Image 1 (cartoon, helix red, strand yellow):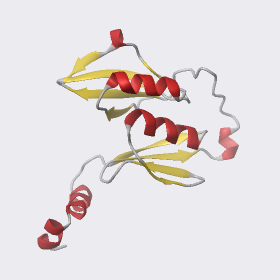
Image 2 (image 1 turned 120 degrees about the vertical axis):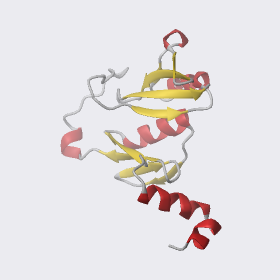
Image 3 (image 1 turned 60 degrees about the horizontal axis):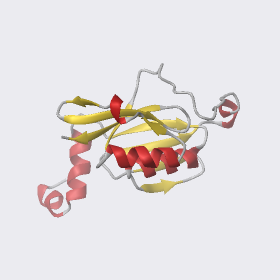
Image 4 (image 1 turned 120 degrees about the horizontal axis):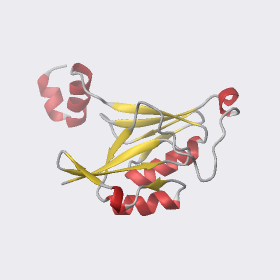
Length: 147
């Protein structure tokens, strides 16, 4: 694609850059209750729902998006989500989101079925305030607030 076209359209430039460089452009999360997790992550991270279908939802803008995929019914029937959800901390992956304010996200998470650890469990990492939480299905994630 000619550079003149990319200069005229910054979105195309970002997409082109993401496709030609090795960069993380998103994450996929599997869900038993797709609408609930889409609502949760939209409320807590302020990522807008771009697409929602029967089997998937896309949150955020390119080049970085969260895709939530509905677990197939035969698998979902074997998954038990407790209330409140039990944290699933034995997974090797943790999603990380940048937020404007961890305290606001903490309040929102409680309203939509998840939780963010209390203020006393926040820490500093690479100049950012950091705190873990979990969604309504027990998936652990991390929030970061820039310095």
